[in-house]
Length: 276
Figure 1: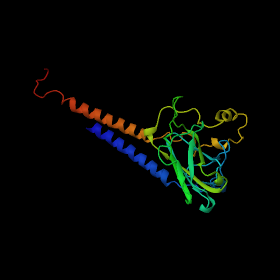
Figure 2 (figure 1 turned 90 degrees about the vertical axis):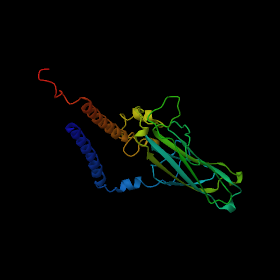
Figure 3 (figure 1 turned 90 degrees about the horizontal axis):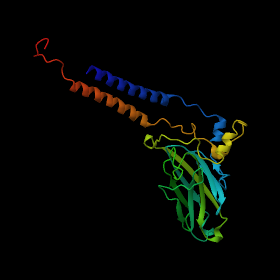
Figure 4 (figure 1 turned 135 degrees about the vertical axis):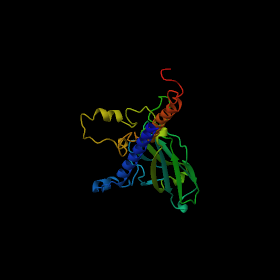
């Protein structure tokens, strides 16, 4: 039983070290953002009109745009492996007196290969009555995978495009001014969605061309769609799967030692004569 106590003490000590490390990271002071970082984090106030001119946004960064009814509005953000993105949009409509009928708005999300991704939650298409002041839409994507078969349509890490537009309205209402608000949030789904494979590069337009020119001109700016998430791509390689694996191995070792001690017996029987 002494060996069991030693292993148990080692497991508890390791767990306490993990807790102390997490506390130390949480208690470390956060550096104050500089003026340049503050300017970069400013919320965008315009949207692109195509995939190539999509306005880059960050997760949890609100974006606004003033446009005309009938315009296609595009934003782009990075989504990494094991993350699930939720995009929400709100369109403030013109005054009811200026409109001639109901309008249907739609929110679409495309991956780096411009494949339209299905929404598992949310209302990505909604009709606004003539007297409605605004319309709200949302779309929650599937969890992004580290790799997929060539024939699959699984969401892969890379750039994700958000497109907002009206799909049905009276012809007389085209061109009326609207105000759009878009915000995307990203949640890490943990080690349950971790896979062993991973892409060589995140999906994004011109990724191969940009990578080949890095050696020639490292100072050339990359397109907005190729911006990396905070911490870099596949930054979440550490997951709770490691903790469960280590805990399972320690428990298996303890169970093996306990079973051995329970089945090995007490040694030589005392009633046997010496030399027998």
